[in-house]
Image (tube, rainbow, N blue to C red; front, side, top):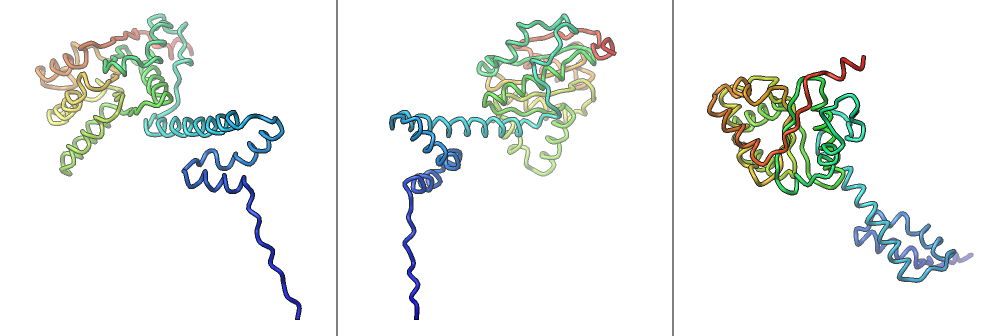
Length: 253
């Protein structure tokens, strides 16, 4: 009877290192480690340099995953970048305005941004582009329309979950509300939206886009006193950007 000899499995140092990476949750580095070791041997680099390069790979991958996660969480309706905004088509918007929105210092300072102008003047483009830039820089962002937010708050209130939803919105670094002024809100919805704005006042940044001047916000919030209170909160320390009255979508056709 022939005996079968089972050879012991040889575990290489690289395999041990890959397993250690997985146990340490270095999931970006683990699949790249084998190639990285071969490359390090070929280049004859020092141990500290090898370690620095390996850890940088993990950091880069984590940064990209975080960026993708933040962009996904923002719930943008479409991709619009600030670099794509046509400054020649809208002379009201300057490169300084674009730089301010991209930089995001207003978010760090908890300052509001208000975009005012007629339809087709680029308000939504600027708002979405600002959200995208902030999310790509690792900030927590949420984009929504005024009607969507009002409906979500009303449903949460009916389900006795309003505090939870208000708390969730309070954790975003930037809350962007588009299309304010397109839909008239009933008294209850207007009060709920006011609550969100009050919770964020001087604590976290808000960016709003509206086709209506401040003097007409009472048509959206129905109660003139409530409208005045909203304007007061949204304009305090705000960056107010006028996008004009001429639709560049129409002029570009």
